[in-house]
Length: 81
Image 1 (cartoon, helix red, strand yellow):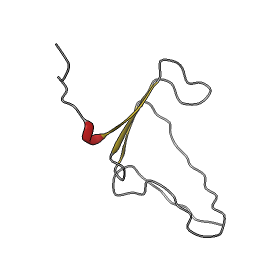
Image 2 (cartoon, rainbow, N blue to C red):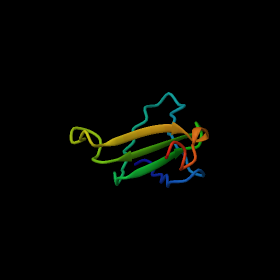
Image 3 (cartoon, rainbow, N blue to C red):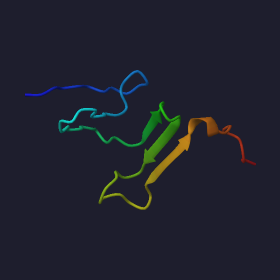
Image 4 (tube, rainbow, N blue to C red):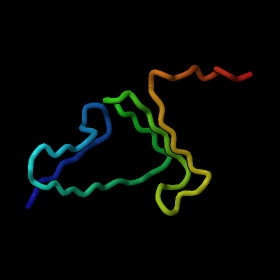
């Protein structure tokens, strides 16, 4: 008993689940955790980049996890000599 929803990537899909009822909400999220990953957050105008090992206890010091605002982007050659 329950419902199933699929939230594929892209700006036309939901980016969060909000429980606006008084009933408990239980959900199971399934992800491939394939890295590298680039994620756009259209509601907040952010961009996230993750690379290296996966998050959690196995995350290594060579992992990259960086978030920035899309509007703060720079040209590829900025700062290069």
